[in-house]
Length: 166
Image 1: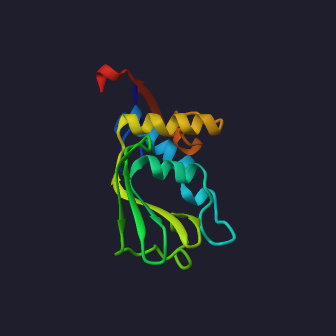
Image 2: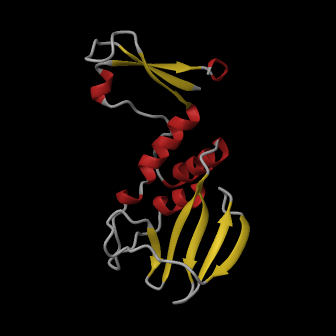
């Protein structure tokens, strides 16, 4: 299933009937999950680190590399798949903990001196997206389908497409 968005009101650039964009079901679900699980939604703990929860779960699912500081001079690098299955693990000594005291957009979790952060490459496959949504549905009452904003509902038409037509 996917969606095509058509313009239904003439605008400065588009005319009535223009196809504005097409989205696959995977893309809709992934984007919706990203908005629901965004690390900024959870705020900060008193130590200025992000709290565990959907944001950390989302990053753990899409990021192939997880870094965990184990001492002042050592960090554990774990490479996983979307389900958290360990592919490889190594201890590294050359690392930099992201500056979570100055960067309000940081994505650092854990506790001081035992920080955890994630890096790419990112996995945005259908399997990873389904895994993320099973986690979201288990922990919240969110629906995986994209909800068009009211402002868009006035000037756009959303058409659901069967998978074989995408």
